[in-house]
Image (tube, rainbow, N blue to C red; front, top):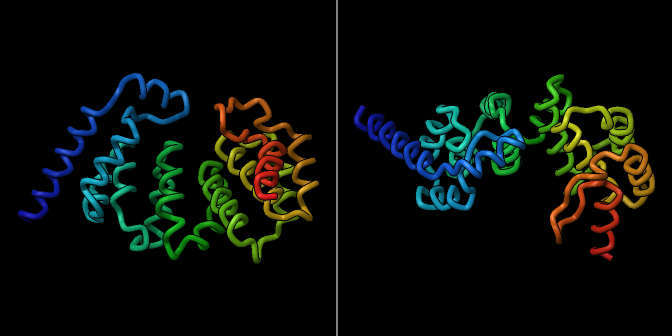
Length: 226
C-alpha cells in the first residue's frame, strides 16, 4: 500500500509540474492542430530524462487521460513490454494527433506486436485508427516492403486519398511518397497520382523543410540520394 501511495503522490506531483509548464500561447497553437496541451516538448523531454524509464508510473500517467501526461508516459515507458490488446486500447483512446503519433512511433514500432497491429488497424473502419495502420505501412515500405502489395496500395490511395479525413489522408500520402521514393518501378505512377489528386499541394512548408506534396517529396529525396 505504501508503494501505491508513493506512486500516486508522484503522479500528483508530475501533474502539478506539467500544469506549471503549460503555456497558453503553445496551447492555442496546438489547438489549431487538434492537440489539447500547452507544454513545450523540449521541456517535457527534460522531465522524462529526469524520471528515466518507469513502466508503472507510465501506466498511471496514461490513465489520467491528460495529453501532456500521456506524452510523458510514452517517453518513460518500456515499449516492448506491452501486450497487443493493451496497445490497441491505447491507440483507440489516444484521441489527439500528437499522442497518437508518439504512441505509434515511440512505442508500437518498437513492440513485437507491431506487424499484427499494423494489419488490424489498416483495415479498421475508424479513419483515425486506420491512419495508424497506414503510418506503420509507410514505415514498412521504407524499411522492407516484402509481402506488401504495393500496386494494390496505390489503387487504394488513388481511389480514396482525395476524400479521406485529414489524419488518414496524411498517412495515405506518406505511403504514396514512400512507394515513390523506395520503388523506382512504381515512381512514375506514384508521382502521377500525386499530381492528379493534388493532396497537400498547398500545405505550408517551413524554410529548409521538404514539402509533404508527394511529387515534390519524392523528387527531393530521390535527388538527395543520387
